[in-house]
Image 1 (cartoon, rainbow, N blue to C red):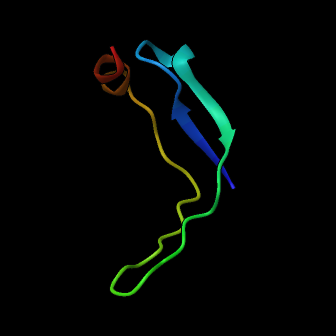
Image 2: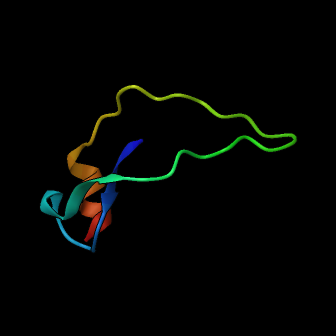
Image 3: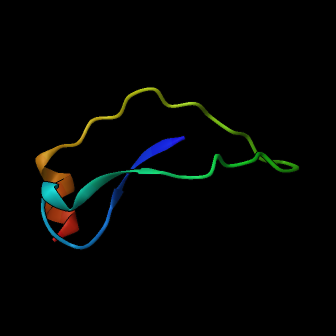
Length: 48
């Protein structure tokens, strides 16, 4: 699966699209599919 990851502390340019292993739901846990997520200026501030 693909995921946006913060490769380093910084602004929006530190976000990279990466291929990652799909997580597995274990006992007592639930796996939720997210098809879209927003990134706001506050998210960039937190990455700094």
